[in-house]
Length: 316
Image 1 (tube, rainbow, N blue to C red):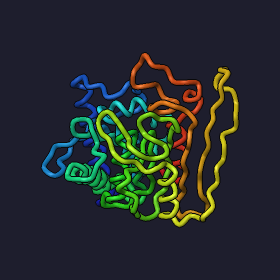
Image 2 (cartoon, helix red, strand yellow):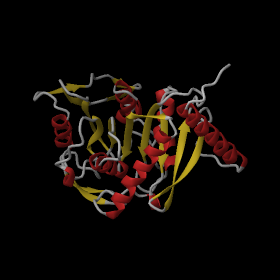
Image 3 (tube, rainbow, N blue to C red):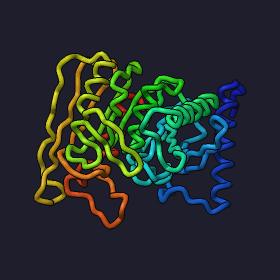
Image 4 (tube, one colour):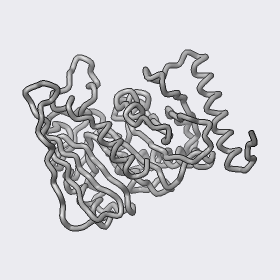
């Protein structure tokens, strides 16, 4: 078998070797990053602005030498990349060997929701992560996606609006809101999906003061953020609201109620998945506290699958 010695091939081979070395070292040291053994993961450490930063990287099917999508997933406050990897289960839902999934760690476990030097520092970190994989020949710079949960979602909006050095192809947020100071954000066409609970006690669907344990900020109404991205993506003026079909939720005498709000004629798709449910938790996923059980409505709607299906339709 002949192996090309082009610069791109050599770069991807270097990335593969480095990843295998890190993975073997992690295993030798007894490091367990996730209870999902079917998908190999390793910890990446890079210097960003003179600070050592870390992320969990899942690079499946590594020996196929081609550029692929990059999906950066930002955890909620007080967590780490490995934690949100377990909670979301995106890799299991995706069942795809295409993307590189990256789960970066925030300093002190908190992504900054407000503008300022901390936000600038962390935007640079995402820039440096993306450039790392692009320079190694592993990532297609036209297919970078950002996913954010809770305060990680608020920072995801900020990072996409500020720019991470490359165009972001898609943004997905869960139980989060767009900070009000970003109301004039115009990053260029970005596929956009948000999953919001109408009665979330911490993130007001109608806008106002978002009160998270680790941060508080003024939030745009969820539908205003949708309209902003619709305008940014040159969508038509008419919004479509499509209610979920009612059906019994796993045998319980309750129904999933909610709507998908979207616009047509866009340069990139925009959707808001509005759930008529309460609680500040990821719909369809086990709560952060093991003694809490999801409601029937939340069990019946899988937010992780919904955002993955959206991202896949838009190039992930």
